[in-house]
Amino acid sequence: MTESNVAPNSSSTVAAVAIKLPTFWPNQAEVWFMQAEAQFTIRGITADDTKYYHLLASLDQDTASRVLSMLQHPPATGKYDAL
Image (cartoon, rainbow, N blue to C red; front, side, top):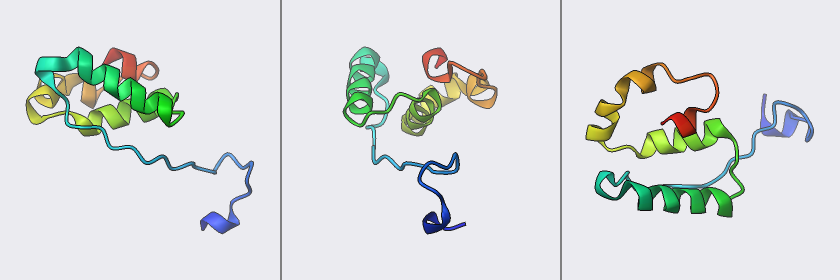
């Protein structure tokens, strides 16, 4: 289905949000999260899944390895807060 075939109020409608967080800073995690939250607020991102997947995409290799179990088996809700 193309975008033009989706009704504006349809549950299939997806709003793309352009955001590219910097790679996670393990030595300055608190500051990194503050900046990430600022980007989410500026762009109106409040959905847990959206925040979680942006965070996941920004993890450096070492940090991703440390939390691999959670990445493989994230909780059903509260993914972002858990990570």
